Length: 336
Image: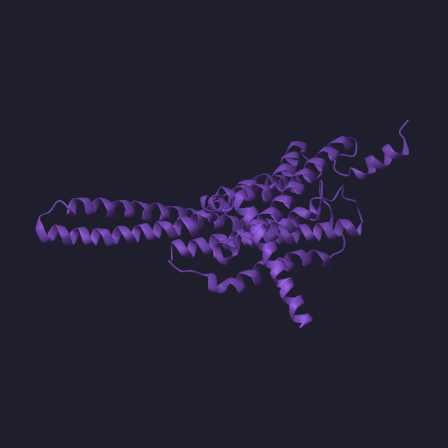
């Protein structure tokens, strides 16, 4: 005989009604990975603030992406989706908004890299435009399904868009088009970086041959070669600081997005035959991006060299001392 608690648990598992343990496993994995992403995102933001990495635009792009990932990870902490529940509608709206938010920030990083490497144009003057587009534009696809009652609801292990036509309109068609555009831009960026790298090697090699000449001609060639080498070294340094730290983020996002995208397509094509392995893989892949991004950030040699534990302790002590001086100044001023 099935108890009331068991019956309630089976009713909560809308994805696998006869196997509630599968739902519990998906929710548990999703919450663990989402919790790790939330903590990792907060830690990443803390490190950027303490060590003032935010002074460079490339790191501010990472800040914006991390905020978007944080918002996306928080919603994965919710439990079993319930039909006709305000919480379910909120989860679906938030998930649609935050997924688009993350996607647009990854696209913005790709745009920044494309203009920087291919067009030799720095787009940091458009920072406010980046922020406005990436944080405001996702409201449109998130709000549109609210126009039709029942469009948001349980869609697998979480709440999302239930109608296939609406899914195509607010996610699949525009998101896949944007992903393909990002892949094309990313390929062009890598080709350009490879070509620049080969050109740099060619300059250095040419200088060696010029130095073999005689007298004044050899001296002039060496001078030109030295200037070219300095220019190449300067460009390489800029690439290390401005380009290479950002290259991995779009690549990793595209890799992690493949499984959730495949699961959503499978769920849209066969809504009555959910794939448990795909849902498990999605519960791992979708919420884990915050944790992966933290490791990508810390693998940056500039960050590793600067953000050591000893340096962190020094920064915290300096901030406390600065706060004490400010408080003493205000007390002295008020006393006077």
